[in-house]
Image (cartoon, rainbow, N blue to C red; front, side, top):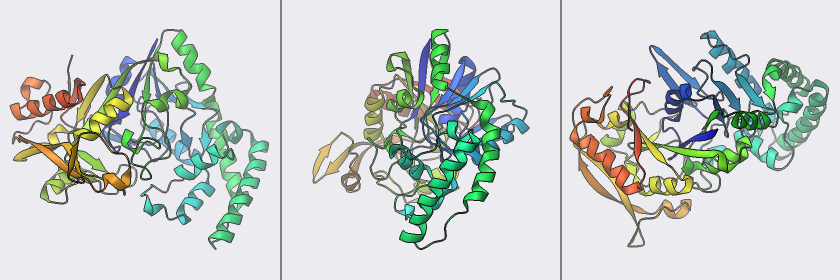
Length: 421
């Protein structure tokens, strides 16, 4: 009947997986619409902690179908391993997981190319995401429908590895790849995935016509959007709400609700401008208490104050109908809380976000300061249980963005979430 979208409003790592996991039981389908195994959605329930990279965060909700849409780039080996790990936990995905036949594959030659192309200048995960999207746009990519067609796949892969080897050896002076070994391995992976492959666009259209509700899940965050993020320090897809339609093949008129996920502070992994970044003891506090290490790479995240200018930009870009504020508990113990409300550029103040990385890297953030709190708020179940200073911060976020806060996360577990009506 309708589509709800969950979008990261910052530079990723906002806690989207937890929010999707909480919402999933109320939906019939959870669908990933972009990104690849560079995503790391951490879910905690009871004594379990699990990180999902390609599978939608609804896999742990019985009776919920899960879709990996055409906008996702899939590394077959990583996906097969992830499916096996989830099933070892007792969650059978047969008849529940559906993979788009139009999704593109990440293959070993994509990872080889990324390793030699100085990707550290951007700070990528080196999982072949960018080269796979490059091949997709250049109309050289291999789709999942081709992967499961053994004879066709073998021929295509031979040609693509020959092309890539000429680049690796000619331009970079490194050894080429062995096509026969890769074909043998990936034909078997294609067979393992074939039972999940279908036309997911038809599947989702039929679901909408049948009155079912769909939860669309993005990876990364809006400030990493290939068009609207801090280019070139961005991902290779569209994690903003605009990517839902192209990444799943559903019409924009089906979208009724867009939930923006924001931390109570900011983090960023890799390179790129970060106006509110803190390199002092407060930033260290956020990193330590918030366990700010990449779920996919293990890299430490850069930490800083909440940037409300950037958040308001994300609200407008995505048309958020509501916000979820995560990791509010990480700020406990700080004497004061600061939020950025303006940028100073060339001695002039402005309150709109700048996605030109060259300029954003030079702005000076101007802050509004709020009193902190010392109480441990982890696990609070109602807003009334929070200290006044914490409630005041949430209210300030609502007022500045003009978007209501409907969820407040006070800890990593499912149960540590305040739901607001």
